[in-house]
Image (cartoon, rainbow, N blue to C red; front, side, top):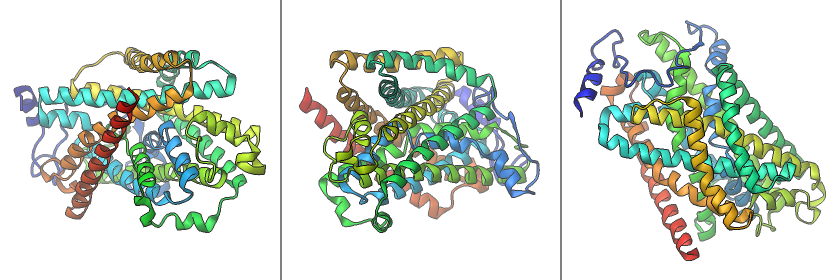
Amino acid sequence: MHESEQDGASKGSNPTEGDREGHPLLQTANGKSLEEINATVAVPRSKDGFWRNLLAFSGPGALVAVGYMDPGNWITSIGGGAQYGYLLMSVILISSLIAMMLQYMSAKLGIVTGLDLAQATRLHTGRKLSFVLWICTELAVMATDIAEVIGGAIALKLLFGIPLVWGVALTVLDVLILLLLTRIGFRRIEAVVATLILVIMAVFVYEVVLARPDLPAMIEGFIPRREILGKGQLTMALGIVGATVMPHNLYLHSSIVQTRDFDRTDDSQVSNAVRFATWDSNIQLTMAFIVNCLLLVLGAAMFFGHGEGLDTFTALYNALGDKTIAGPVASGLLSTLFAVALLASGQNSTITGTLTGQIVMEGFIRMRIPLWLRRLVTRVISIIPVLICTIAFGGRESALDNLLVYSQVFLCVALPISMIPLVWFTSSKKIMGKYANPRWLAFIAWLVVAILTGLNAQLVIQDVGELMTLL
């Protein structure tokens, strides 16, 4: 560890010292995480009043849940239902449970140590390795941004007929939206995000009700079956897992839980914060789980048997208005609502992607730049490959969908880079004190890390192989 980092670590203490017996004193690295909004949201000072506490701590979970229902999830979930009916419902359930576990650890790390995951990684690895990890994580953030750009541009084309090239360019204006939101306070940002989530959920609840799914088959789908191991089914299942557990959410959650203003030297208040941050996270991720289930059920109820060719957003949009595919409930209204939900999903992801980019830059390399510049640079870099792809292939959406799929490779690579230190830190009594993961949870977490790393490695090999065949 470098000398400067040893000095930073020495400002903390081991679990047996300091004002809070049982866990370490707060450590800092380059100041507080997201310093401009850190500890800006008031919360009750006592455990009295469950609903009052839950309301005060609710919000960060909504921003995290956005990553579990972004445009990247849509194709895999709807496509999984269209091709294999309700078979893959169990995959969504298992992925959501894994997400709840990892986000719980992420929130706990931020609350107990006062560090986000990027700061903690820098503190315990050193400058050179942190720089390499920062590059990998930045690629993952940009890959996520590419999915947002593609989803937003296609939604603009479907709703307003704007050509894809212009739609891609217009997504730069998302910067202005975020700058406006940052001026109205973090609590209002959380409210905007939660509202957009409710819009997305309402759209798909309405469409699924009209589709009249087979309820017994849907419930049976939550039981894992051997058929999932078939070649095509397994590939789609891996796609759902890869699109669900997103590395940038682990950095985001460990930071934004620190927006709550409580006494970090009072053990009872720390315990209270961990408790209600967990409630918030699990409630919001349950909503994300429901949305992903609705997506798969929509694909199964309306498109099962017509799954071939329904692998782009435009194809799904058109299918919702085609009575020969979607049946008698097909209408232009369903198609329009689908596009509105897609646009809402892209805008939500824009907000969280920007915050994550700031977190990893300040945490890994301790570099601060104005938020507007950070957002502008990230978005411009992200739209360059999308614009090139759009122009080179004559504005064909299929090319953008292929780019979206290949952007997930970076997310696959970055996932173990995020999961391994998270599980390591939160399982360490030296770092977390009495809040360290119990042995049974640590065992499950390391098992999940090994399985997800293996599955993502398989996805990388598969995607690279498909890419090579196209070259």
